[in-house]
Length: 187
Ligand SMILES: OCN(O)CCCc1ccccc1
Ligand code: NI
Image (cartoon, rainbow, N blue to C red; front, side, top):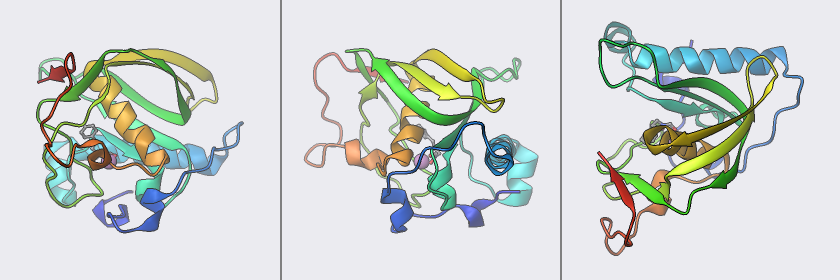
């Protein structure tokens, strides 16, 4: 089971490497890794388990954060209202690739954080508002989906990890809250 001790922190060179594509059909090892990553996310969002296991809450995780330089991400985005436990996006993605994106940019009003960054780094992280994404799913099937807003932002944060990019690389060092015209601020 993955816990915080398995997550590498900034300074570890793996976070700055470009991760390798996984072979398809997927190996048992890569399938198990994906399952373990998804289990971590669900545990991290469960108040009892997160407390027991001392987990920081996360909506996404990338294999390089486990010091595994492979193009595998997991995302588990809970639905806002507690009544409806259905997540808005829950998937393990192998070899995810952004095929196209909107001209429209977006950022989270509250900025971003990262399980591999043990500090606050304030500022807007400007990303694409909408993306068209291809990936291989846990069954080995090719998928092609369109995402927007928060789900699109989470997936871009994770794909950045596969390319050695950290969220704060996108923050304007002169003015962390500078925004070009037309960028959608998502609250
Ligand atoms: O890489 C996953 N991770 O460090 C957990 C935080 C994920 C995340 C946080 C804010 C906005 C987008 C994604
Ligand atoms: Ni991260």
